[in-house]
Amino acid sequence: MAGTGRIGTAHAETLKGFEEVESVVVADVDTARAAAAAAKLGVESMSLDELFAAGLDGLVVTAATDAHPGLIIAAVDAGIPVFCEKPVAADIPGTLAVIDRIDASDVPVQIGFQRRFDAGYAAARAAVASGELGWLHTLRATTFDPAPPPAEYVAHSGGLFRDCGVHDFDIVRWVSGREVTEVYAVGANRGERFFVDAGDVDTAAATLTLDDGTLATVSLTRYNGAGYDVRLDVLGSVSGVVVGLDDRAPLRSVEPGVAPLPGPAYPGFMERFRPAYTTELRAFLDVVAGRAPSPCVAANALEAFYIAEACEVSRRERRPVQLAEVRR
Image (cartoon, rainbow, N blue to C red):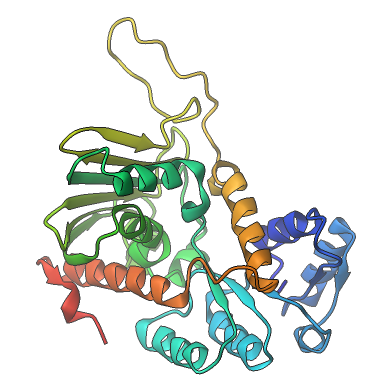
């Protein structure tokens, strides 16, 4: 494990609990943080250099974004299967450079888009593939965080579309089985000043046109005080399904006689997607063992990044943007 922040420590704990995993070792540029995480979990800590010399079977990367390219390439060059949380790199040229190195090897790389391993999203994808919904006319995706991240995180996040919306862009592609051809995006700032200072927005909406004419909308905010709310409506000519509408959805109907959802709302993404993260890491074990190919390759992350980039251009320039404009 390279990176021992919140998600890294959670992943290490999950991996430690798998019967198939003999040992977990953690490393971080912040050696004190790595040592503290190791002590908490009862695992070994070491430096990043020591990590690559430790005879690893697989590497999980949860370090800061700017460290992703170097760690992925180092693992690939060492012949170590690697799982890396999104993004592959901070920008499109960096992502393409990493993909070139991956493609020149036979070492599997899996990128972390955990919604692909969520039972609800998987069921929606199966419903689309089976034809039971008819032809799709609309997808509506939402990611509403209950509170904003710290100012220092926002300043280096890449913006709301690249940091947050990229999960929705990936899942729209994965569930629908279609590609995005054009976007139109807008953003707003009604919260903390540090979003403006970073050239970012705290709330955004994007309309995506898919290659078969299906329309998708993606709504994002950092200020959903009711709780963490991530949903996807998949609506077809015959029927429709919704992902994320469970007893903990932070919604309250004002229709007479409709009972409130029992709650409580999910406080954040770790709680909402904990089963998906576990399933995702189990899939990586199959990749490491050679039992399965990577279920989410770096090229998938690149496609979602292209959509995020197009949305950012659209927001800044206030115009529709073809995906062809941002492809390299």
